[in-house]
Image (cartoon, rainbow, N blue to C red; front, side, top):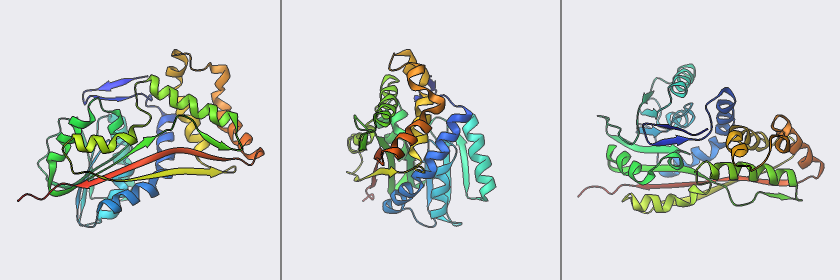
Length: 280
């Protein structure tokens, strides 16, 4: 399913209870690497942070931890259901310094001047990420921080010893994204996107997820990504429902990996961060 909102943003994975669970499970696995990005970029106590593509609020909450009670985080989200969830989670966590705005991040007009703009897995969903980034940085003060993190899914998964089902599951997800019009290697575009948006060259870092055994969380994450992309996968004949067996896919993959004592590499996440130049 490909839904486009007024922000010129497309999200190909249908919003559902299962998709929300997948996003939150993935957010838990990504929290350490996203926190490292925010710290490396220079997010610190007392800052005002603009967080875009908030989803369920996970990155906003990570930023709130870093800016503390003297700082503030404003999250932007276009989907009303996700916005309600983000607000409820923030309230439950006791963060009074975090607020969310429903809106078009490519046309955003806020009175507040921010110290940083940050986002995770959002630029790849925008029809024109360069124009969006140009617009977003207008809300930064001189010397402001720009920090984004995006996915990179190489052409093939990696398991050793080779587990065909893991490789197949990985391939289904990647091909589904491509057929839906998303660049599965968008993380590698961050350097070019920053430069083309008129920003100073960013620093770059890549985190790869490697795991083994029965408790590695990425079996479920990848399988649930396939579930969310199932309409696209079936439409384009990437695989049949019988071939995928979605309800047992994660467990079958786990069993195969454990039985062969195999190690797998999951998707990578590329971080890019820079600072605006101070005005003369």
